[in-house]
Structures are given as structure tokens and as C-alpha cells.
Amino acid sequence: MAKQIKFTYDGVDYTLEFTRATIQQMENEGFVIDDVDRKPMTMIPKLFAGAFREHHRFTKQETISAIYDAMPNKEKLLKTLGEMYNEPMLSLMDEPEKSSKNVNWEVDG
Amino acid sequence: MGSGRVTSSDSLLSADGKSKDNSSADFRYGKTFEEQCSYYMSIGMSYNDYWHGDCWMAKYYREAYQKKLEQRNNDMWLQGLYIYEAICNASPILNPMSKKHEPIPYRDSPIPITEAQSMRQKKEAEKKQMEHDKEIMKQRMIAINERLKGKEVDNGRRTD
Image 1 (cartoon, each protein chain N blue to C red):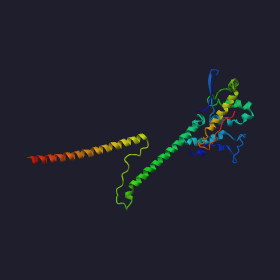
Image 2 (tube, each protein chain N blue to C red):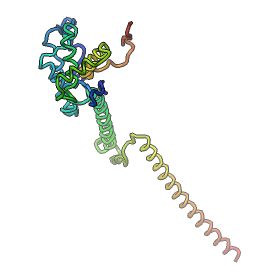
Image 3 (tube, rainbow over the protein chains, first blue to last red):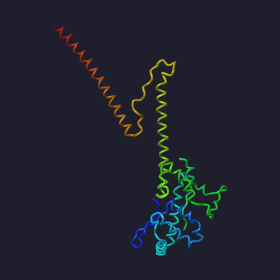
Image 4 (tube, each protein chain N blue to C red):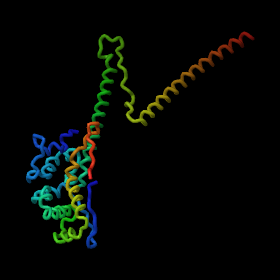
């Protein structure tokens, strides 16, 4: 199951999700995921707005901006949006078959 | 499955193994999505599911296709076994040097591939064998009874 962000704002239920179609649309409009690191102030709201496209295509930009401003824990939000954005690509990749040659890795810190 | 059809981490690397210049706008997820779309459609995923559905569906379609391939391979192997057995059974006709020119009949039931099928066939064979043994016993009893009847007649004549 793909990761989704769910919340209610102003009495409306929202489900944020990226699909291959929405990512392609965003890229066609000039969105580059690497720019999030270089220009976070402009790109993070764009990334956030992109997540509305699949289920809430007709939500106004002002509403999206207001929701973004009202969102707490921005650091976690950005991390989750990044993971969600990468999922459609990751799902096309195969996991290596289990073997003794596989590298064990863990998150440090 | 041709795992080459799956986007590998190699496709994100340049020829020298270093990461491609991802900072350029040239690297787009969308390009890979477009390239892979026809492959996923060929393994049964609908266009709508690929572009708008849950992205992890693609993984399950890949796994299902892998299973389908394995199943097909097993089916073909089994078919080969039937053909091999049929040729072996018919070989007495094909061999002019063979004394016995009668072919061995083709098997009367398929090779069991499930445990239930195997059990059913085993039970049927046991039942058949039991019926056969019962018939033999019946024939023997009839023969013995007739012999005994004959002896009784002989004894009756002697006593007379």
C-alpha cells in the first residue's frame, strides 16, 4: 500500500498521495526533486501541492498554502513527502534475492 | 521474468558507475515511468492502475507474472512427460525387432499433481484391486463348492 497523508481541514477530509501520473505532470511543469535541497522555500510548497493532484485536483492554491502553513512538524512532513514521492519509482525496482552476499545495513543516528 | 525489464539501480548510473548527473533536469522519473508502462501493460496491469493506482500494485503484478511463468514452465514440463511416456508406450509398434508388437495403453487417468488428486487415485486403485480380489475369491468359492458337491454325489453313490 502506498504511503498517504490523511487529515481534515475546514471540515473536508484530505488524502495526499503521489501516483506516477501526478509525478509526471509535476516534472512536465518543471518540478525537479533535487531542487528541494537547493531551493527548499519554493520547492517544498510545490511538492506539497503536487500531493493534492491525485485526489483533490481542484483545490485552490490559496487553500493548499493555508493548509501548508497550518501543518505542524514540517520536518517530518518533508521527510514523508519525499518518501511518498520516491515510492512510485521504488516500486518498479526489484529487491535482490536473499543471499549471503547481501549487504546488511542500518540507519546511524 | 526478465528482471531486466525492472528498473534497476544500474539504470540510474552512468557507464563509469558514477551517479548520472541528476542535478540536470534531464533525469526524470516520468521518463522511466513511460518506458516501463508498456511492460507492465504486457503483464496484465491496466493503464489506469499503472498511472493512477496504488504504486505498489506494480510490485505485485511483477510477482504474479513470475508465478505465472513458473506455472507455465511446470505445465510444459508435465506435457513433455506425457509425450515422453506416450512415445515410450507406443515404442513396441515402432520397433521392428520387438517381439511384442502391442503398444502399452495410454494412462487411463492424468498424473496426479495435487495431494487430493493423488489420494483419490490411490483410493480408486485400492477399490479396484479389492473388487478384483473379491471376484477371484468368489470364483474360487464357486469352484470349491462345485468340487464339494461332486464329492457328495460320489459319496452318496458309494453308500447306495
